[in-house]
Image 1 (cartoon, helix red, strand yellow):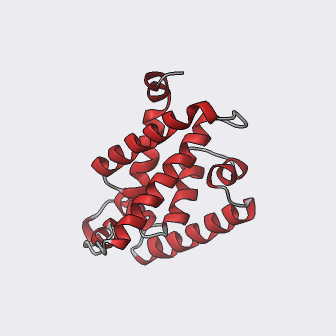
Image 2: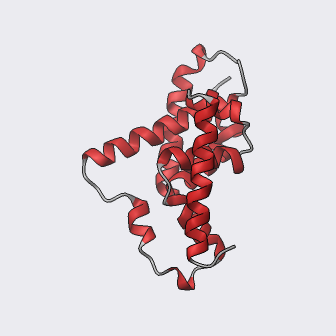
Length: 157
C-alpha cells in the first residue's frame, strides 16, 4: 500500500476525528497530515490484528496528545478555554453540544468521539489507545455525565 491509497481510504475519518477533538479545521488538517506521515513511516511494521482505521485512530490520538503537550509547555491558552467563554445564549443546540464536548479532558473527548462519531467498540478503543476496557468505560461514563450536567445548565435536553 502506498501513501495515496492510505490517504484515499482513511483521510476523511481521521480528519473528522481530529476536527472533533480540537475544534479547528486548520489544526485538524495539520494533525491529520502528521498522522499519515507517521503511519506511512510505520506501515511496514503494521500488524493487522484489527482494522486499519483503529490503528490510524491510535496514531491520530497520539499526534493530538503530543500537540497538546507541546502547547502546554509553551503556556498557550488552549482552544477550548477561549471557546468556552463565548455567550451560549445565542448558540444552537449543536454548538452547545460541541462546546460541552470541547470542555472535556482530551482523554474523555477522545473516547467519546471514537465511540459515538466513529462507532468503535470499547475493545477497539482500548486497543487504539492502549488502555484497559474498564478505563474506556469510565472515561465514557464520566465524560457523558459532565456533558449532561453542562448541557442541562444551559437548557439543552
